Image (cartoon, rainbow, N blue to C red; front, side):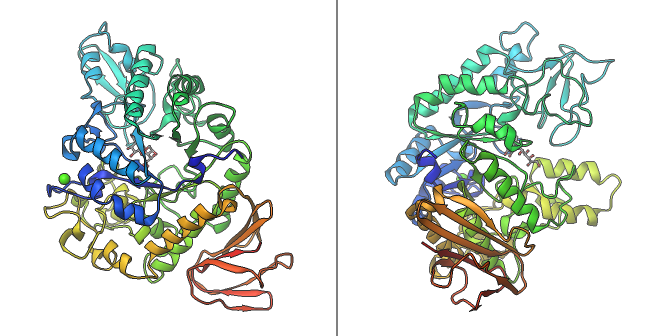
Length: 550
Ligand code: ISL
Ligand code: CA
């Protein structure tokens, strides 16, 4: 594999509303991010992915943009942004912008114009369709519930919104629209930003005939639609190829086969993408039902994507983000083994093949929040779901699912210290702080040598210092084992072995005879000592070991 900086990098995602509030109005802001750059430098990350900071009425927390070339008042000014970029670069930290151009806000000037009349210059920037038998043009649903079409009385047409009705879908068929998007991208790149995380970018292209969705789903209709690769090739030629940047596509509903087309190194499209197979485990139509999964399912997903892109393109590695429950709550144990399991999961993400992404607070083991009252939730998806289901469901049962799955689990304020509101703000925060902030916070993490924070720091270091972790091959060890995830990484004459106990029981793991780890050096572990007899390691709850063999 060709060497590049973004393969060697560790990315840290910041959700600005919830990171740090510098002016005590209850909402995080850009100055708050600047205040914490030294903290991030200490952690050792290379790149910040900044969730949207553009002008937005915040119907979907900034993923509904009303001006792509300006900063949301709550977050600060363009001057603050320039300072952030400058201060980050001074510390050798790169900045990725979140590019949300499947849709804009309905308050964007393009949409305001487009709504004026059918022959307005901007009409064609959005997706309009005539009613069918007096109803919606087709059966497409919004990701956040209900129809994806909103009726516009003035023109007797509907417009498409795959997300909220305040997020009208842009029409990528329009060349003028695409040109405007590319020039906006250059606006940011010319400032010096280092790349883009591209929101739902496999939804840009919609099939012309807009047929109803049937049992085959949205594939080819709006997921991985007919012209999507043409758009990326054009974007690459017009924009990406002119800068030394990284691009990561957010792509729900892709297989490795699709991925090879999006990120194949000879394709000139994107550098890497996020798939959601792990997040959606075990695949189910209603995401709020989180059922148990098997460890072999997890391994299969990791290996399928490793094999699928091996020597073709590059993977990204993550177990949570701002749309997902907290990693330690979902895949680990957020009670008695919080620290052990958070470290174990981190070991997987940071020693596998691909670029690791850390979501803010993950590095101190922040957990799901479990608000009891629906009034404490702010996320539009959660609220829509509640309103839809409460009509004929028991509240207690419904709230159980929301507590496990709501996107707000990831959006409670960053827990900086033990002071009121976890040191995030001196005002009332826009969303409540997780009540466990007195036990889980950065201040304590920085004090304790054995903290999750320092474990992350060591993992990041390890990756920076060992090419085998970045570029090595992966080979599964005891692939069928339902308790232990173990694998070998190999590069020329370097070799490491990673052994992870995924559960909270003691397990005797027999090391296959062909592996000689007795003489090997332990590079990382979340337990101080080791219990090994002959060829058997006794793994304690969530024990993680990284051996250097050669
Ligand atoms: O969170 C989800 C719903 O369960 C995902 O399906 C999510 O909607 C999807 O991954 C797209 O997410 C991105 O685009 C959305 C925005 O709400 C998310 O925050 C963003 O990450 C619309 O812009
Ligand atoms: Ca603020």
